[in-house]
Image (cartoon, rainbow, N blue to C red; front, side):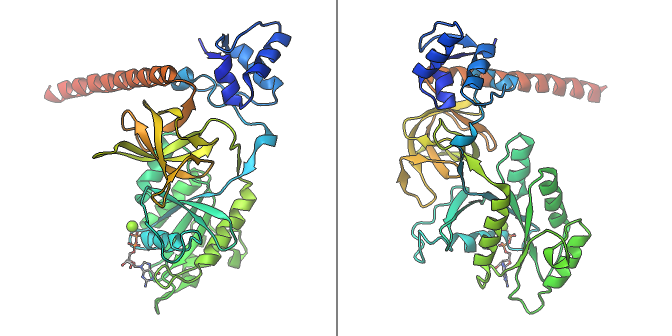
Length: 370
Ligand code: GDP
Ligand code: MG
């Protein structure tokens, strides 16, 4: 049965426990901080506070009401999260590197460029943009297949000397399936043989109508190599983001998604997490997929230690007891007992799934032999 403690419920709503106890009292339920209440009662309380409760799927039952929606008034604007996609050799990596160097905070010198799978840039105008630079489409599609919505918009890179190619089409399909708006970066415009007009025309065949041709798809002619029009590309991203009205509540326990994770000599399991709501702090206890940990250190995309990371901020998290997978959801919980419980539950479940798949495998092999 779905239950939650008064304390955890208060945490999830970013309300004080005493206020939750008072609310329960009004409903005729006497409780203490450690009292366990059922989901129906919790939902009533949640509604009283003006939040919306979202019952989570079976796999997340143990986390209780992790997905409580934030009250409208608690939401604050956040940076857009952008993924770059496109055909091989059209300049995805080059463009990500070039955009990274536009960060006015790290400056021309650049400082240490730490590759943690995502980075944030502060533009000329002072606005922030988060870029996910996990290579390839796989990151995007795998994560999406696992239910993680990471990206707010896609930058489709198309080389102006090559035009739309098979992986460009693939990228368009992925973005459309995910219902994520596309901005087209027509790259390599420094090349003499560049033909941006042709790229615009080709886009029409894929139901992307550029603004110049009367549609609503924004295209920017850039050169990652010559670093031209990068500022305009960023302004276009911010314009598109404004239309999406991206907001999150920074004042609640953090929830986010694992962008990448690996085991590192001398550092243990390290995960890059993109915080999606709330603020992740040093000392927080969290569950990430079927692993858990306590934040020992947070490292930003410049390689520096930070105390906290808010919505749309990517950070490297140290302190995991195991290595989670890209696309895993990360949620801060109120105790290590709870974290361990959830982690064990999920590991058991994973083993069950694997065992079932294994059994199927043997059966198939049997038939093959016959
Ligand atoms: P990716 O496979 O999409 O990540 O493409 P890369 O960023 O690795 O770029 C592929 C090749 O195109 C490299 O040799 C780059 O130097 C080159 N390239 C990328 N952007 C530009 C550009 O704007 N102009 C020119 N002339 N070459 C570029
Ligand atoms: Mg590349």
